[in-house]
Length: 181
Image (cartoon, rainbow, N blue to C red; front, top):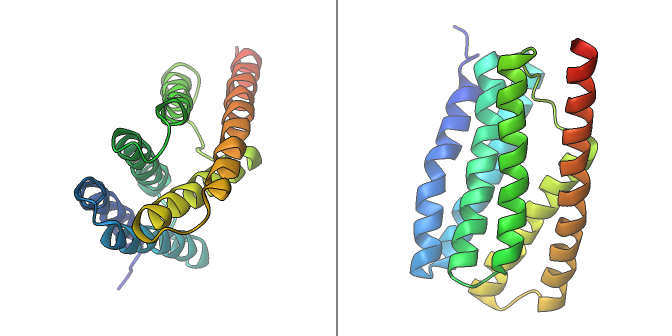
């Protein structure tokens, strides 16, 4: 019996966790939101490990995994901006970059060739910083730790990596599109 469907099922479960996490944040239940956020993070690692370890890669999985990540991150940035736990401008910049990347990927996929979906190194750094930022914001809102200066530093680092990775995506995909013509 093959379990090659398991990474996709885990990604779908991660998507299903987004709404409860956001509702818990809106209710001010940061401890529970933090617990589900950790579960979502662990599930991301597990599905990636299973796909690589057992070669259970699928085209669907290559799409589901980043979509699940984007839904979680975007939803949390929007919700935390709404609750005024983070600045609205930071949420707008993070969401704006993701919208540019998604729109570019869709256009590239339909106009040039299928997108491989492999993130760049700067994008991986950006994602780690965003997740750490969200973790710190949730922990601060629920438990008063860490010091706000850590959140400010992470926010500044996110701003820098969002701009660099956004420009990198646009430039590299534009270059590839010109070479494909």
